[in-house]
Image (cartoon, rainbow, N blue to C red; front, side, top):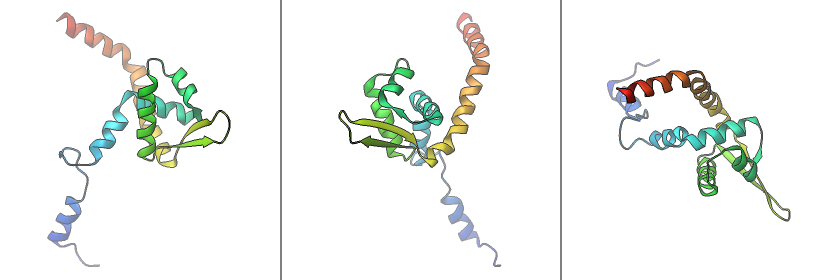
Length: 131
């Protein structure tokens, strides 16, 4: 086994994504995953396949336009698949991909954290606003 040369080591480090740099492509993934609508869609699709109307009814406050944009973005990123069934009217279903499934634990962890700590966050906001 040959030792890694300094030039090779620098190349390996330079190829590691660094979201703190402006040109890092991981920023687009972080933007997608950090979006509240994305998180809610992922959590629902983790349970089972859903139709557009089911997602729309389940996620209060999301407009059809924003839901469409969110679903298209997730499909583009390979996190879900859109399946159109040849029926009249057409039936469209959304299902997580294996890649999307790998994200569910992280998103579910944020959901759990928010549910557990919402009281503390609200108290901190109230104290700040009174302040």
